Length: 113
Length: 114
Image 1 (spheres, helix red, strand yellow):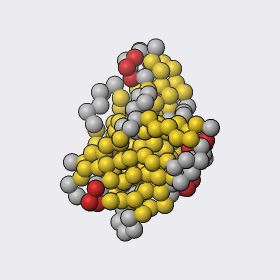
Image 2: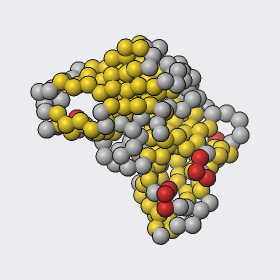
Image 3: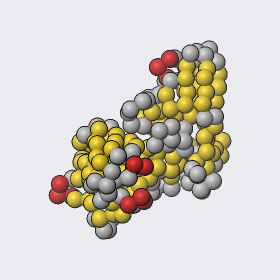
């Protein structure tokens, strides 16, 4: 069982829809991450939150909007996505020290029609 | 700046044979190094990590890796492959800081032949 829970596991949406991905952890981690992973590729960092503040935005298009309501929750709001945004979206969390590993959820498989 | 190179996008071994997955890193400061495994339709699971101290690191599922600073390498090994080891393996490097900006290698898909 993973300690980082992501919902939903699968999501199919049209290009005009608005949806949200959710991530939850109860390990007391103060850093949380969103990654995008295309097939046969490594995860690509999208956003980093540290102590509920956005610390890194890797030049992600504005159709992706992250939100960190509290230290346990991380959301990714989606609007007007493109077919190329179809991918596995992974959430991760870690302690705030760089030598501590990230813990990953099982991801949300997103398909854009 | 930091980077990771994984040699071999696909590695095939026979069941019971030695597993060797190669990883070389580049970092301007002493790095933290990780190996993750990803099974189909799952997230990444930590196999092992090197931070400081002992250069031979033991992880889960019988895997281990040795940090060799002179060779800037962190190769992953397992003495005897099991069918259940078939998966994608990622080497990763991060630097110290209040949060991690992890750089992943391109991954190595391990196939285990019965």
